[in-house]
Amino acid sequence: MAVFPRLRFPDQAPSAELRSWFHGEPGARVATEEHRLLGYILPDLFGYHIVQLGCCHMEDLIASSRVSHGVTIDTDKQGAATAHLRCQGDALPLAAASIDVLVLPHILEFSADPKPILREVARVLIGEGHIVVLGFNPWSFHGLWSLLWRWQGRAPWNGKFISASRVKDWLQILGFDIVNFSRASFLPPLRRAGLNRRLQFIENLGSSCWPYFGNVYLLVGKKRVEGITPLKVGWRQRRRVVSNGVAEPTARDMSRGGCK
Image 1 (cartoon, rainbow, N blue to C red):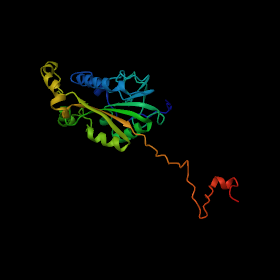
Image 2 (image 1 turned 60 degrees about the horizontal axis):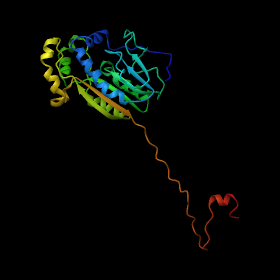
Image 3 (image 1 turned 30 degrees about the vertical axis):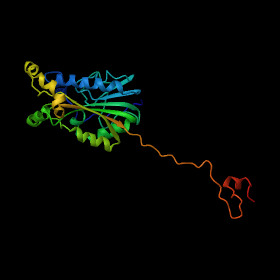
Image 4 (image 1 turned 135 degrees about the vertical axis):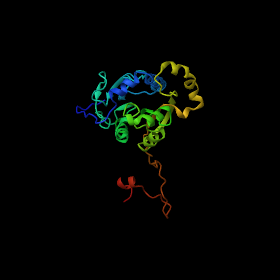
């Protein structure tokens, strides 16, 4: 994996406030569910290099991967100290077609424009490489809280929650096939741990009764490799018979003096 020396820092990135939210109630419950989803997906994605782009709540989201070489890239200048690199999400310091798996935890909804980030991901992924997107579902309790409290400007409610269907459309335009999709976390974002425990039945029933309203989703896209249709070669070309009953010589015969 080639790394270029010049790094650019973002104008807008997940803040320390968002990271703090993921470490408290109810963000920690959401982080646990996301870690569980990744534990189902990442062990089945193979290759030589895996990259986690952004570490808004966990620096070890890719710990369950079997890929030997993992790198964490933070898109926040004042992000986690354990990040290997820091750069702008739409200017990755990575060579084209050099990464096998790239994980994006809540980068798109906290960027000024998510589409350049996805284009950059498509550039650095190898053919048949995988992108793993974690996002907040706007059609959920968290989406409702975002509508109610966005005016306060506090994370995570100040993010631009993007529906999974829109992310799917963007990825398909960029040449990805959607190979896995799941949702998790169905409780309202209440800060009282005792009340959350009493409402645990909502979490238990959510995946079977109202899966569409999961607070977060995980989406996996596989980069397509455009096939080349080979031309059929006539190895045994039939010779055309001329009027006098003699087979017409081929070009090879003519070049060797077979026709004088």
